[in-house]
Structures are given as C-alpha cells and as structure tokens.
Image (cartoon, rainbow, N blue to C red; front, side, top):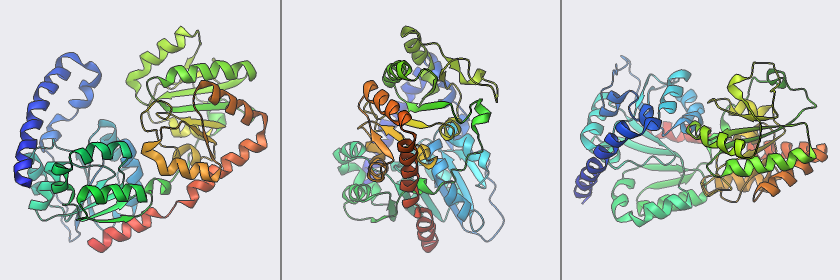
Length: 420
C-alpha cells in the first residue's frame, strides 16, 4: 500500500510543481531567487566527495535557518566522531549551514521525487538520516527504508494546527511516519501527536527543546548602536502581515508617554518591507532604515525599520523589552527563546501554537507577558519602563526559564550515538 500511495504522491507532486515553477519564473520575482537558487542541487546533482576514513556518515536535514541554528550544538558534538552531510530547503538555511562549517558537505534538499531521493541516498550512503523538527517527506522516508537507513527525528515538533492537517491524511502518512525509527519530541503534546500519526509504530520520547541549548552569547553592546544605558529600547521581532499596523499604533501610543523611546520593528520576511513602509507612511511615522545607520551612531529617527537579515539577535540583546511576532495574528508565533536568553521581558499574543511549551514556560516563570493588541503592548511597555525593578525582574525570570530547560542536546546526542 505504501508503494501505491508513493506513486500517487509523486504524480500529484509533478502535476502541481511544474505549473507552479513556470508561474514563479514568469510572474514572481519575489520568490524567483529562492526557487532557482542552486537549482541543480534540487535534482540531486551534488558535488559530494566521501571522506576516506572509517567514520560513519550521518545525513542531517533541516528545513530553514531556524532549524540549522537549533541543531548547531548537536553538530558541534557529532562532527569529530562522524562524517556529516547537512541539507536544507531554503537559501538562507543552506547559506548559514555553509557559513558555520560544522558539516563536511552542505546542499539543498532535492525535490521530493523518489528517483531523486534514492539517488541522494546512493551518493551520500548515510548510516543514519536525522530529520529536524517537522521534516516529513514521503519519498525521502520511503527511500530511507528501501536503503535500510535508520531514521531519527530530533527536536520533533507537531503543532495542533499542523496535526489537524496531517491527521486528516493519516491514511497516507501512517505508512511513511512509521518508517521513522525514533522521534525525540520537544514536549509531551508533540510526542502524543507523533504517536497518533505513526499509529504507535514509532518509538517516541520527550527530549526537550534543543533550541534552549544554543550559545546565545552576542558580542554586541549598546555602544555599537549609539545607545547609552539610559536610552529606552523596544524591539518587535519577526512581525507578520497585519502586525505592522499593531506595532505602529503601539509606537504612537508609547511615544505619547515616553518621548525618547527607540522602537525597532523587524519583519519576519524582508519581502514585506514595502508593505510595512506603506503602513508607517500612512500613519505619518518617520523612520530610519537599519541598513543606513552607521556603527556607533544613534538612529536619526526613533522608529527603526530593520531591513537586513541576521541582526535580530543583536538587536534583542541591546533592547529593554521585546515582542515576538506571529502571535497576535494567527501565525502560530515566533521563537521567544532568543530574547528570553538575553534576559529581556518577552511580550507575545495568544497565538503561540508553534511555541506553546516555550510560551507556557516563560509565563510560568514570570518572564513572559501576554498581550492582545496595540493598547496592551503600549500599556505593558509603559508600565515596565516606569518600574525598572519590575522590568529587570521580568528579564531575569525570562533567563531563568531558558536555563531551566537546558539539557536536551546531551540527551539527543546520546540517543543518536546509541543508534549508531
């Protein structure tokens, strides 16, 4: 039955992918660079040279930049004992993986057609395939089973929203998810969903979230941004469509109470910059572009639009209060661990399904604060700035929440080594 479903899956994928590619090529300049970046790698045309040693080979696959960053400490512990091949789906994920140089080979994941995936396994000849978070690809899992490769999922994540989709297609996915030998899930909720999806045929354990074990030391100071310790700095990170208006309104409300506050706003996707600019201009908010600010110079305007990639962690580290986006609009939220690891109070909305455990932990420790909209963000921000002791305590509690969850990397690495 798995073979039958795989054939249907491959045919449907081809039917959908071919017209979609032509559409992107002709009409969508926004996604063209992403889709056609190193396009040959999408067809398993890899310049892979196997290491001439006796070490076993591990293929680790991540979706995007966030997953590559999350798995860094695991790579650090594995790289001396194993040959590591690392793949990612996105351009930014692949570029970052290549930059950190913690794998022996880096490439984009091939398109999920069985012939391409089978070819990839023949090229790498891995002893184990490690999938990070929610990377479920039918052809990849089928090819791994055909090539007798052990498959592990680490930092397994299955949000309630994702589970509804996968569960509706459980008649299909159970044949492929059950090919995974072991799943190390972030939380009990994630574990229960994976158990249901695999029909109880996969070993599932709760390991905790490896994102807590990242090295969060940021070599940035307020002086780098032209700020002193007396300056008041708020950052809204990874904001999604619809939240730009909320953040703009919050800025105007806070500005009435705290005239010298600096507000950073970082869209989750840089492709949305033009839309955010329009929102700011419609509200008559003057802003500085982050890319135009010289190191050590204070921004000319008190609203700073972050128009570059990879600087958010540094901005979090010099902020007083942080908000994580995707949480007021229904996008499942963004990662609250990064600002919390910088000992900052973290504001977020109710829609944190993708980071439910992290949000609950921050709320439990008193380092996280729920907000519902612009008024709420403004009120909480003014309240914290009016009571520096309260703000410092909330930041310290956020860091305690992060430290309380550390240890998942060692457990994950030990389980990997047991299997190998």
